[in-house]
Length: 481
Image (cartoon, rainbow, N blue to C red):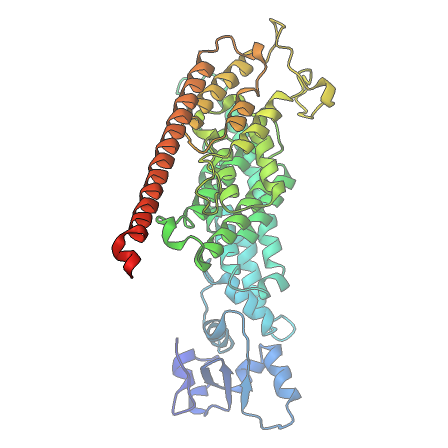
């Protein structure tokens, strides 16, 4: 960053000529201070284009004021330098990288048509309308720049216009993609390439945005009618990028520390925001089970709100027949309790209960819960469309039981509650259940045996210690003492 001081600097050489005016021969008559930077300039070029500078000079009590202090300029000294060059007639190149900065600075310095034709505000608006707003990727990049220009970017409505442009263009691309796929349904001599979906080429670009702007963009595209499967892909990509940076390799080093609390807070905010943006709950939801499971695990670890966890539990329950064992092995948030179980069995009980209470007769897939008295599957009906689903879930539960049975801290009552989740007629074969019970009993017996051995050794040691003390006290030498 150049630091323009009043000492013998030639402004003309730095900032250029204004219509060949011999301004380099005129000494600086105005110093503009922005933070630690100081610019030795001339009043005339500035007041001819900047309403802000003109008003500050007019409002000054001293008509010969030679110093103006601007505590804040959007974009700082760098932005003001570009604006000053523009005032001196320098040809400023407006690019995707600086258009947001120049637009906010022009607004702050009031560089409008009221003071000069084709002023900086107009120039930036033309670039935005011609080059940025019609293009999704450029709109996202400029929106990302706006995150460092708040609140000026909001005051100019630049943020809202960019978000609206992204949403409109996304839906246009969705329509174009749909028409291309329609054309592919007709045979042709040359096999066409699969068209690229919008999420493939711009959805990933949203990962550069902060959470607030990302939420606003997703809400806008949902309102405009972007398909749920595309929204799901965007959310998965954003979650992967935003939460991946918050993973600590050695949790024991930070557990309970201020860093750990701050990490949990960031994870909690991100997870709760992403869950609020998920597509509508449905048995045929486009959101993959593995993604829902990872969100729930993170939500529990980060102590997310009850409503957030309940939402995820219900979503998983609706799609439980798509789950594998890894999806439901949800670790317990033990908070350092060595006697807690390895896996969160209470959460699994709630998830399986949601699945078992699904409305069997809801052919329209409205996914609403029925009255409690009617929340049952018609397992006895051979033509039941959910028979295959319940069989998958019964195998899943038996595999889960076999896994958690290895946990020595799992109580018999909790194991029994899990085993009794499914009705008897939900299992065609009970081999999986018998295997889980066998594992649990062996682990329990081993635990009881070791507890007995430990107690025996402990009490034996204590008895021997008391006997030695008694012999020592009762010895003749000790009595003489």
